[in-house]
Length: 441
Image (cartoon, rainbow, N blue to C red; front, side):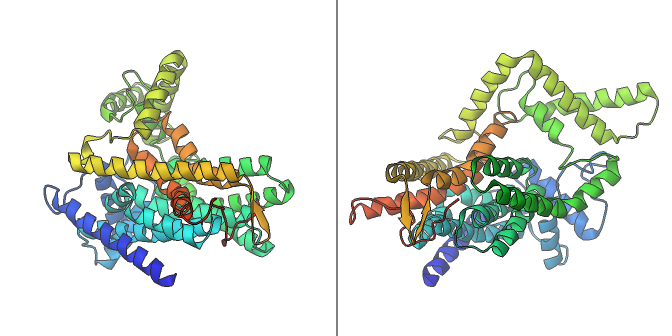
């Protein structure tokens, strides 16, 4: 099995590095970015390496981006003595993407068995959406690694029957730590862990123990997040859990003329309004300009949503379709061939995922190594990122870009779906956890 995993890792890394070089060669020059967000991450990473003030766009944008991804880029700057090429950072993301493939296989092995883990790892290695996340200089790539590691920690903490209390406690701390790192990379992940822990405490057995472990996880989360929280308080005099881009992102999704996709052209008007208001008042507020601007955008969005509930519901449907559309929405995806490959890869993962869910429903409960695991818990864990991101982006803007981390987790179920297909040639039914490490939640 070690050889098989080495091969899967090598394939994942080779495909991603090759795609990274190819993608960079398609840009205008070797220092060009395909996305505006990429440039901001690059600048912030360079500022961290140089020891300069952490800000992008001046003093009024000191909490515009969370520091997780820029810290990784800063580390890459250090490795290259401050002069890394753009393609080398893509290679960095490719390496992280290859390790994410191993993490997906590990999660699948824990939930099912070694064979399913290999299938899941192979699928995630060649899934076009996962490859794309690994080669772009965007936060989704490194975020996925810590998202999957958090899911592994959740399983070890709450679902496995083969872990001691000490191991569960360490796993609980790992939940908090990995969740915090994921939030520092991708702030939209902020509410996932509290929501999931709440569901576990309300729906599971041994609520006292689960509440204690959940509290430990939240302590770990707060410990890792505290340097960023302290820094933000020093800047604004207020508690800022992630960034001060929430208001802009919310208005981007809920505003007059919104259609589900991002269009930040409204920002100049809000800059002018906030600047004029500050001049009219003629006094200095204890809040920073960035904080006041964020609040103005947030309040304007919520006011519009209250006045237009029917439009909010219509937009939610539009965003749901955009997120789970078979065909890419964005023109930035590339050629028609690229769109076709992405669509086929997405359909393949979803087909095998559906097959796995049907098989798990049919088998209901299955014994393995003296333990039982309710299949619905396995499906719920693997589906939770999809449910979370879907709900989130039915409010904010939506695109197939935002479904990619969720589909990556679906490869765990898809791996089981492949195992079921192959098992039908030799056995009448496909049994979850056979020969694996199934546990009881």
